[in-house]
Image (cartoon, rainbow, N blue to C red; front, side):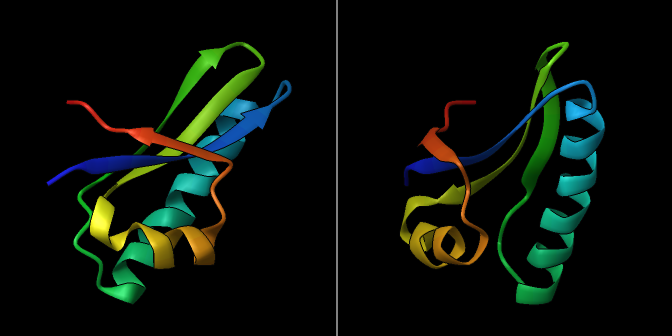
Length: 78
């Protein structure tokens, strides 16, 4: 089963803190919706760009995408 990485981009001097905070909300959403999602995290791409992300099964992606409106997505490879 293919997995997709849904990504939210944050830019600026507070990007990493914002991505970290956004991850808290993603985890809350996963809990509330009782989703089978085990990978959600954040990381810095550089000093001014960070991302928050969650990895979902392709078959589950559309309702999650429509509810959370990620900025982009890509195929996830471990």
